[in-house]
Amino acid sequence: MGVFDIIGPVMIGPSSSHTAGAARIGLMARKILHDEPAAATLTVYGSFAKTYKGHGTDKALVAGLLGFSADDTRLRNSFELAAKAGLQITLQRSDAEVNHPNTVRIAMTGKHGAQAEVLGVSLGGGKIEIREINGFDVSLSGEEHTLITLHHDQPGIIAQATTILAIGHINVSNMKVFRSGKHADAVMIVCTDSPVPEEIINLIRNISAIKSVVTLSPL
Image 1 (cartoon, rainbow, N blue to C red):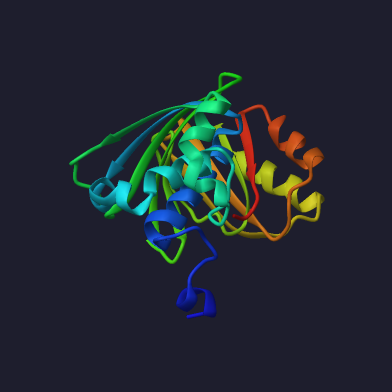
Image 2: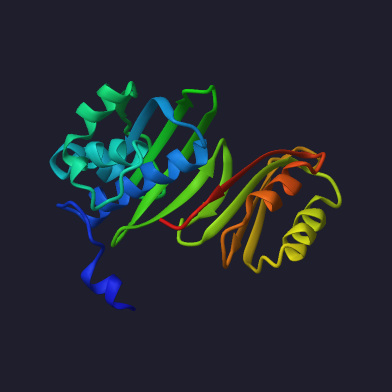
C-alpha cells in the first residue's frame, strides 16, 4: 500500500469513490470516444444510483466528459458548463443487479459522429476500471499509456501490431485481447511505458483488418 492509497487523490470532494472516481470514469469515457461529446446518457447503478446527488457523482461524471480532472474546481458547475458547451446530458437510475456498487454506463455521441459506450466502476481512492467498451468485456485502469484497437479477429494481427511497436522502440508493459467470437470483432488493449508516436499509430491503423485505433494517456 502506498501513500496515495492512504491519503487518497487530490480532488474536489466529498468522496474519492463517488466524486473523484466518477470524474475519472467520465474523462476516460471521453478519451475512448475520441471526439468532443455532443450527447451522453449516464445510467447509474448500485450505490451510485442511491447517493449520486448528495456525493456529486452526477456533476463529477459530467465534468469528466467535459475533459476536467478530479481536482478541477469547475466540477461543481459541470451541468451549467455542459449546457454552454452544447453537451446534452441524460441521467437515469437503474435497479439492475451489477457486480460492483459504484457502476455507471455511459453511452456517447460525438460532435463529429463518433459513438461509444463504456461501463466503468469506481474502486475507491479515486481508482477506476473500465469493464466494457462497446459491448466488449475489457479491463482498463487508465494508469498507463494505452493503445486500443478494434479489429477483425484473424491470424497475424497481433504480431503485425506488436512488430510495429517494436520497430518504434515502444516497450509493452502488458497486453490483452478480447473478442466477441472466433473470426468476429475483437479489441486489443496494449499498455506501454511511453506514449506511442502518431507515425506509429498510423502504421498500426493501416493494418488491413484494424478498424480503429485510440490512444490514451494516464489519468
